[in-house]
Length: 335
Ligand SMILES: Cc1cc2nc3c(=O)[nH]c(=O)nc-3n(C[C@H](O)[C@H](O)[C@H](O)COP(=O)(O)O)c2cc1C
Image (cartoon, protein in one colour):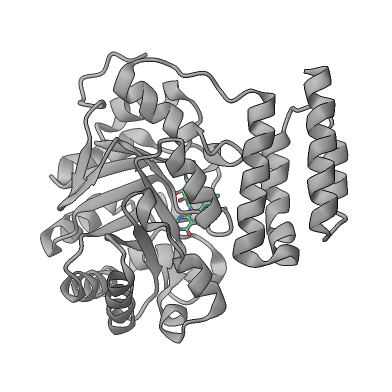
């Protein structure tokens, strides 16, 4: 599994920013908020990327954009992802992000969601290369910190232009490119085409990150082998398992598999995650936002269905806390 002709154990530099390993937590709107990123980083993800922040909203300082912009300076490099469609607005948002402490600005050319694409943002920019170019020029010109770009392989099977767009990004000064190995029209169907990512790697010499469908340590090595990428980015496989990117990083660095958290540790991590969500969002929004995480964490644990049912029907943090203790004890007895 670990024999691979790439320096997977080494750190990575994005411009002057040192990333301690080659595993990145993917930006996931509604999932990779500050509490989740903090956990992933503590468990060893080399870099964590914010949820995408709409540039216009950031300039208006909306509540959501403020929450999405929250970061933990002490935990490691800060990467803020921007979405948008107007070069000037995106440049202003990049400037503001850098002023507030972002070490890296990532531009989103990958989001497939209809409401984003309708505004000609996210992956829609892969079929408007002139506008994508203007955006990259404006953002890269606006800040001194490194700018990176995240894209899909293209809009659809007939227009997989990631190699061309990546070349343009590199020529404009982008310092790293991430490719999710699907087209926009695939959304999340089919499988990520890691081999196509190799065509992007061949087209550029900046750092290339491969993304899509990495669910195990074996997958991470397989993805690097097929794509020749410099690093991997992991999204959905970290849901309910914020330690997973760190597990991959640990294997890259040592060749050893570290033990998964046991049942008691998983409950403790969930408890910490929920507490952080309550303090970021307030209790009732925190509980609502936490429900999906609870579902992911507890998959396969004894008592999970009943616990989920309780969480889905309360907005009282005292009930949540008491139920966590009760179900933790129950699952420890039966584990
Ligand atoms: C719930 C969810 C939200 C996402 N939000 C973003 C986002 O804000 N910005 C972005 O570039 N990609 C976003 N993505 C895409 C992921 O970053 C990643 O490219 C994709 O999930 C494929 O990687 P995976 O197979 O490891 O999950 C999102 C994906 C999911 C599942």
